[in-house]
Figure 1 (cartoon, rainbow, N blue to C red):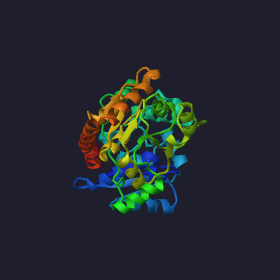
Figure 2 (cartoon, rainbow, N blue to C red):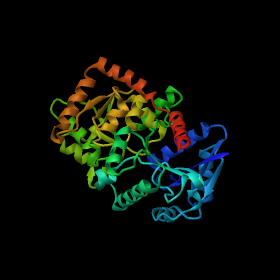
Figure 3 (tube, one colour):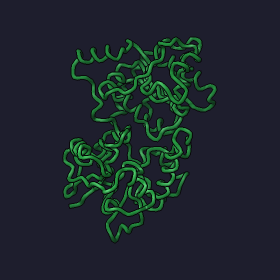
Figure 4 (cartoon, one colour):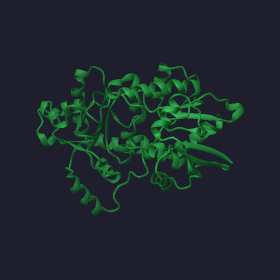
Length: 381
């Protein structure tokens, strides 16, 4: 029996976030698509019995759970130093850079380690991360260059950035993600209407996602809505109300918008997010840099028209299904976003085409396909 060991630690981290969702969906799909004679085990740092039970419940069919002797913090430090552990042998797949990267001989000991890199913000936008996170990311990518048998990137755009940062030879593989299986609409119309009332959803609204950190360019979108003659619809932001000393209210006020024009929707459940996405008049994703375009794929999934920046990863994810806005000339970016909103919301035929194209495009991404490509990667190694 061939065993693929997946590091599932992120499922029980204090803040699982997007990486936790990615880990869960990928591992569940790897279990479902395991070839004959293969199985999937999990690797987790030392934690509580409740956390072990949580992982087993989330991943039915997991052949086993390898419980490390070290807690997450200590295990992370050990792996950063290249200390070999029992988890570092056999076939290991890491959904991130939290991985046992040390010297090994794939031919002799049948050990192979693949790691996943979701962004290169530690190099391109270090100001958006803590100094500790930046240092750890740079250290672990250097270890990956030395010891990883494969580096998975979710987009060709990110793979190109990785190659510019370090020489990985032919070890970089592009394997994208998909919409979470739990991102589903309420089961009936009454439940949906009750949820819409609870969330105080307007009949029509513009939707975006992210924080006020400069890279996300949510500020540029708010400024776009404050321009003379701009579309007069409220903006809902899936994300926190503030970033550092900036708040949505202060940014909106500076843009000349009424206080009720911009509102944060933080801590949404999967069903709530699905409903908010599906009912938006348009989803705008102005981000200046991304490793993968999951938010726009989510919007496509629910048939919502999408406007997005020309960040390479977003263009790659969207194909021809979104309305693209150039990022160059930051001073003119709000004006171009305003023009895009006016065009899409003012042309019903265009909006309908974007809905159709987006729905078709969303079908190009599935967790089953992702898992099968990961299995193929390890087979090739």
